[in-house]
Length: 69
Image (cartoon, rainbow, N blue to C red; front, side, top):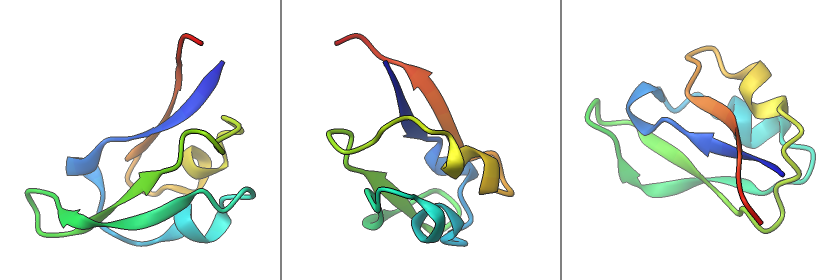
């Protein structure tokens, strides 16, 4: 099973992943990365691993990873 994952320190807070997620399971969190940008959090229960977030992310801060379960 594939799920989205955030590489927090690469994120610049553009919001493309939030805007284009077809399941609307990505939202901005309340924590900042080392560059001072708020980075997204993912509701992994609802994530279908489609990869849209990774495709639209200009900073390669979104990854699709294989998870057990």
